Image (cartoon, rainbow, N blue to C red; front, side, top):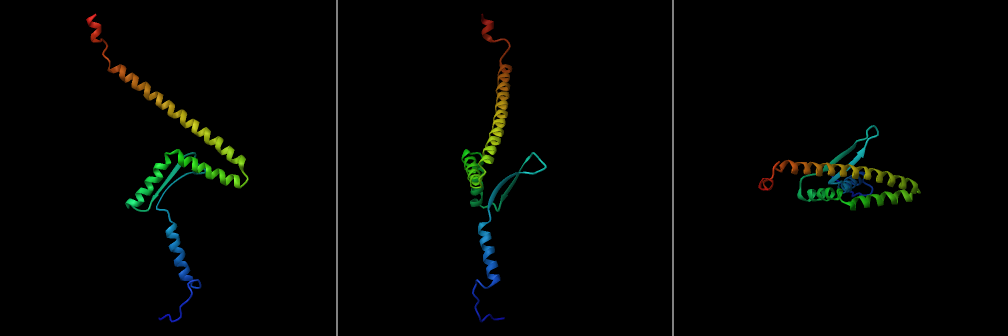
Length: 141
């Protein structure tokens, strides 16, 4: 009932467990975006986590989302991958990864160019449709 003998917190397994739980909570992400591909699927999957809807948490999620569309995050990610592979002595693996990344980027760029060309063509056709068949200036001549 009464604990007359104080234990050293290092000797108390309950205190150690409580401390490790507190440390784990401090390290828990409050916002995350995770992309992954499964072994049996060519599709890219996306998991989004947000701990709560507090303004501070929303600002942190906004920081992630704005970074996704920036070159800054891509460069930083590739740099981290490069450092890890070079440290592991796998420079050739990194070069192969860069080659594949460039191929996917080229394919995405080509697709965007095709889409842009289609939009431009549709806009020109729309402009032609809006023009009268007989212009008033043709009648005056």
